[in-house]
Every structure is written in structure tokens, then in C-alpha cells.
Image (tube, rainbow, N blue to C red):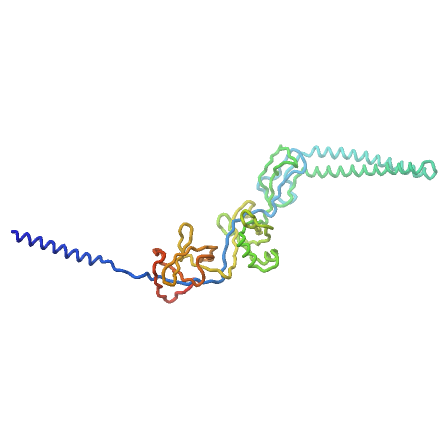
Length: 383
């Protein structure tokens, strides 16, 4: 009985040892060499970059409509948002007091004309009498002076009437340009005055629009270098047309042209303002709209890097290059823009550097790597 038990124990231990040996053999770790990954070489060349700048839009003419005479607003001929033509009546101010002024001044003119006639008769009579030595030369000169004064009074009265008529015409406020009527700040019954701080409304001519945007010092330097001309005006004439992206993300159907540059940089922002003009035949753009200006800038010595070969960590862009010992080196890239599927890089890499195209997701800085054998169609650059 004891022998049987010992035999069973011996068999169990042997089986366990055999199983353990087999398990260890099955899960034995096999050491692997460095990963084989595709490499490419950084190139440098000419590229065209599309740069976007936030823009604000204004009509070519934004005219404040203000009264030129005082009085109560009695009529409004148009509505907010209406399109009006130059010379079209917009508002009417009570004109009764101005009509009465004209009547009063016409009476003063009649009186002045009568005094002029009297002075003329007196002058002519004394000119006859002086020949008969009845009156002296001094009396003639006095009559002449009285005549001149009466003549001046007539001219003054006529000028006052003309001024009153101008004021009467100002009681009808007309559109100085064609455009769209803005929101009214005054209603019927409001007492208007030329000294009012607020305009009655704003009239916008949007047959064309001015698009204003700001550019950094570096971008403006490149902008000036790219186009020929000795003056900024000549450079603007030689600059290509630009595009506008509206606030809904759509591209405006008509291209515009930069036609003016501010005289100085903003010292607080380090930027300068440019103005572009766009035709607006369908009145799709209005004063107060916003959007983005898209400009193409040519760079003859750009260092480009494929976006697909980068990784982003906390808003920073990194790439893996390969050093002379075939070890991965993580590089922080300084990006100045995009060109198609490539980043434009200003720092972090340089032409001739070798980088890892893909498969770097699990790499650590300093890991050894091996270049993958090139297959037909592979290129050794990102151009």
C-alpha cells in the first residue's frame, strides 16, 4: 500500500515538472531587432502658401445722414433697409418757419430796392446841380455814398433771401449717394438739430465694398518683396487678385484687389492694415459683415514637411528625424503655414535631414531604427 502511494506521488511530481518545462518553453521571450521604418529626406524649394487674414467689410461710402437745419421731423419717405438713389428724398423737416423767413426777407428787399431808387434819383439831381454851382462837390460825394450804401443793402437783402431758400431746401433731406438705408435713430415728431450727436440714419453704398484686414510685419515684408515696383502703389498694381471667404465658410464668387495700405504699423499689435476692394453687383456683402481674406504668397526657399509625418502634442507639432547612429530624434517644429498637404517649417529641421515617414507612433527619443528597404515608386523626399 505504501509503495503504491509513493508511486502515485512520484508520477504527479514528474508530470508537474514536465508541464512546467513545456510552459516555459512556449512563453519564452524572443528578442527582436530595431523596427524597420520608411525614411525620407527634407527638401527645399519653391512653394505657394495660402494665408488667411480676418477681415471686416464696409461699403465704399458710409454716409451719416444729418440735418443741416433745425426743426421737427414731419415726414419719413423711406423705410429702413430700402435701396435709394442719389437725390431721392428721405426725410422732411417742418418748413413753415423757413417760408416765413423768405417772405420777411422779400419785404426787406423791396424796401432796400426803394431806398436804392431814392438814392439814385438824389445822386442824379445833385450831379446836375453841381454843374450850375448850386451844390458843392462834397454834396455830390455824399449823395454818391448814400447811393452805394443803398445798393449794398439791396445786395445784402438778396443774399439773405438766397440763404433762406437754401435753408428751406435743407428741410427736405435727400440721399447724397445711392445705397441702402440703415436703422433710424429719429422718428416723426423728433426735434432735429445740426448739433445732434447721433445721425438720423446711415446710408451705405455697397455697389463695391472695402475689405480691411491686418498683416504682421513678417508677412508684410514678404508681400512687398514678392511683387515688383519701386513704390507701394506700383507693388499693389502688380499684386494678384485675392479671394474672400464669407462668415458662412463659402468663397465669394468675385475676386478683389488690394488697393491701399495704412501709413504706419500699429505699435500695440505689430501689424499693418490693408484695404482690398471687391465688386458687389448682387449686394451679397453688406457693411458690418466679417470674413477672411485669402492671399497666395510665393516662397522660393521654403522647407516643407508632410503633415502626415507629424504628430501633435498639446498644440505643438513634432516629427522624428534620424541621426548618424540611426537613432530616432524627436524634433519640435515651428510652423509658419500650410501648402497643400505640407507644413511650411521655419525651425526644427533643415534641408538634408532624414526623417521617419510613418510608423513612429510608439517610438521614444533615442530608439534605434532601421531604414525600410525602398520599393518601386518610393521617393526619398516629400516633394
